[in-house]
Amino acid sequence: MDTAEVILSVLVVVIIIVSLLSNVLVLICFLYNPEIRRQVPGLFNLNLTFCNLLLTVANMPLTLVGLLSRAQPGGDSFCQIAGFLETFLSTNSMLSMAALSIDRWIAVVFPLRYHSKMRHKDAALVLGYTWAHSMSFSTVAACLSWVGYHRLYASCTLSNPRDSSRTQFVVFTVFFHSFTFLLSFIVLCFTYLKVLKVARFHCKRIDVITMQTLVLLVDIHPSVRQRCLEEQKRRRQRATRKISTFIGTFMLCFAPYVITRSMESGALPVPVQAEQEFGPHCRH
Image 1 (cartoon, rainbow, N blue to C red):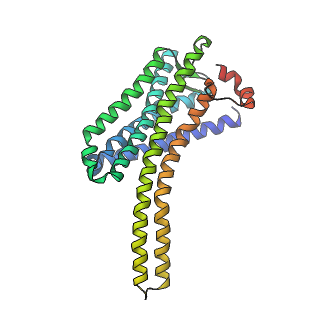
Image 2 (cartoon, one colour):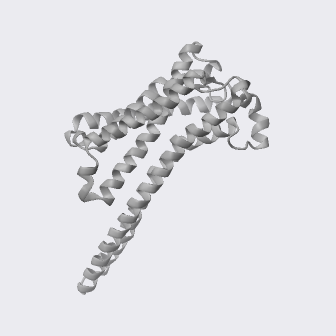
Image 3 (cartoon, rainbow, N blue to C red):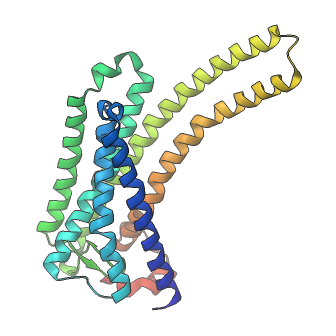
């Protein structure tokens, strides 16, 4: 193994450990906190946590084995099942994050109608759609033999070894990523921009009240006045920072994979240097 493969292997191990600890912690909080279980977002968090845990347990160790052995882990049937699960779980995770953003949008923008618009029955319907959506694309890929071991990713995932069906695979890849990653990203941006707009509106109202209070309190100490002004600034930045972190995490987790898959399939242009370096793998 060269240095790059060693670094990648160590990175995969670290990601596995961090993912296991963080998702198990979320699951423990859900199980031992009745308040979280009563809330509708808890269903979306639970679904997202289970998807992440299953991906960590079922897919990432196989990727580590593929990196270490430079070969397909297990037989073809085993790898096809693993590829089906990887496609299903990653799609479900993206849609679960979009569902969480819709829930927060309704809660912030329509607070008085939230409990009538987003009940546990409504959340179950949304989760039913995420499962049906994920299952449909995964099943189509499995039925057309478009899941298997991919050397470029050292993993059991979407793969098309036959040149005869390359066009169909490219069309499928475009539709798949458009209706999963791109759809989820658009939903995240729309809902959280609406939430940010409401948050900034309330911050302005609070700032007006704070400034009026500071004007009335003529005997207030300058240090106290300065702390109030600094808190105003932090309050304006807090909502933006949280929303940017959530959307940034989504992009960090899914965008590199989607971009490389699109470039590999031909949906996006591949730079000449990358084609020269990874050409044999991409043609596989």
